[in-house]
Amino acid sequence: MAEPLPSYPFERSRYLGSVSRVSPLGIRVNFPFATEVAPSQYAGHRVTRGQVGEFVVIESYGSAIIGRITEIQLPDRDRLSVEPERNEGDEVANPIGMIKLLGSVDLNSNQSSRGIGEVPRVGDYVYHAHPDFVRHAIVSTKGAKSGLIEIGHLSGAPETRISLSPASIFGRHCAVLGTTGGGKSWTTARLVEQVAERGGKVILLDPTGEYHTLQGRVRHVHLGGTRDGDADKREFVSFPYFHLTEMDLFAFLQPSPGVQVPKLRDALQSLKLVHLEPELLDQDSSLLIKAGRAKKPINQAIVAHDHALHAPSAFFEFKDLVEQVLEECVYPTDLNGPKHHWGGRHPNSFDNCITLCMRITTFQKSQPMVPIFAPPAYMTDLTNVIEEFLADPDTAVLRVSMRYLAFEQHTRELVVNAIGRYLLGRARNGDFQEVPLVVAIDEAHQFLNKSIGDESNKVTLDAFGLIAKEGRKYGLTCLLATQRPRDVPEDVLSQIGMFVVHRLINERDQSVVINASGVLDQSTAAFLPNLRDGEALIVGAESIMPMPIILNQPLNKPRLEENVEKTWMSA
Image (cartoon, rainbow, N blue to C red; front, side, top):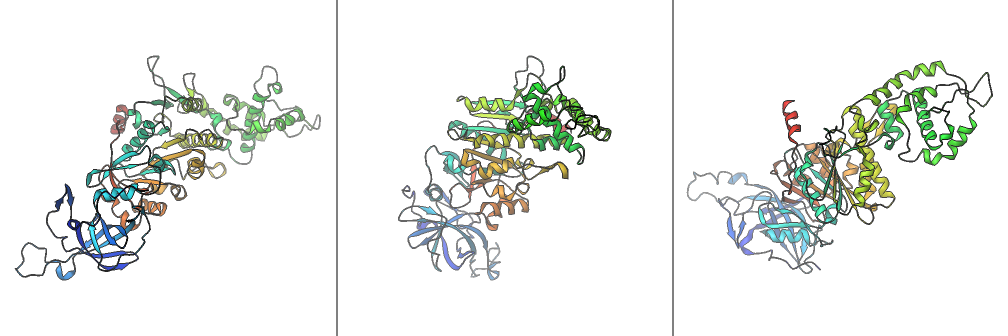
């Protein structure tokens, strides 16, 4: 049963006006006191007489209908009545306004809902909503009430604190949206801190390194980077190449269709095969030599190890890839020898693969690609770190800084997508059923709704889209933070259960959020460009209406590390 009403919703001292017109799009109301210069005070609360953005309560039979003022104007005949120089006996101003209906509170059960039981009638009274009554409308919906997270206070009412259950925030994923400087990073940090405080698990993918300020039960690792001597105590991790799919590698190496694609595919298979069955190797060689060799033993080994060859993270030696590609450049049959043997070197194939081998060599020797293709001994495999983190009850947050990870060749996008795919694979195995995992990703627009590679080697970055669509049934939810909602697929945003929408100026961004949320409309979205720093609209989270809230600041405020700031300022 819902908690008792904190205040009577129809106090005479909060009277604003009466309904003069009713339509499906909203209602028109007379606001006779809207031109008063100063608001009044009642029981310690500020009471305005009708301002755009204020919440109101409409007295209806058996329920209190909640709405929000979206427009106030003077009729043309009264527009001069508010001027300071006017004659005695002039007409008194008679403002009128529009109210968007949001939901209702049943006065018998005290339960709130998005539905309107009975539409207001002409002549019904309209009252300024008490902040505590607005809070009641939020928390009196159905849902778990234990372990509430206090996220902030109602805009304009610091004494009205707003708390939500973790399930309502992360149960169907959460998105933090907003332009730069609106408070998006602070909100993300606050939510991560709150999950950690309640014993949850969070993996935070930090593209810029600004969340290095997080403290407490946090493990910080750096994906990429170089250790500055033995005194450097930072933990560096890698994401080795064998965790990438074949198409990921193709997106990196860009083999041309025709000859290079099949030869590269055969070379990868051969290197995986000799790792599984070393007996296939010639003496003193780490390659699978095919020239003049019988096909049957190798084909039998391929069939026997089919599952292992196509398993995720199947190991092979990348350092041998160039030579193995060239070993694949042979005739399919030996014209001068046994029928079921490979022939000698095929000159045209060999020549066509030279450019591919040059690209592979570039990746082998590229310093920015070291965390992927040639990780040094001091770098730990990130998948092993994740496994340790999940098993460690004393660590609540794993922050993966990608500050040092290269932008070249779409490395960041491909690696982050591979991390998401790895986590989804573990989720499908049931690893997060007992202790759910939240994966938080900042700058999410960089990793969603993109395709990497040319037409013949295209990779769609769909891992986090799949997590949004199916992850929650496996105990894996995501927290997406982005300043460009228009670059995130709408089918991903449509899976989000809670939106924290900071200041959004771009109309395309606003329209995407309107379509995805199912609750926002154009009249409510019109407030988004005017939100203050740290203010946001909370949409979803079992609330009957979008709520303007001043969010609590995080204990450890995100900021760029000093050397990063200096680099950007000098650029």
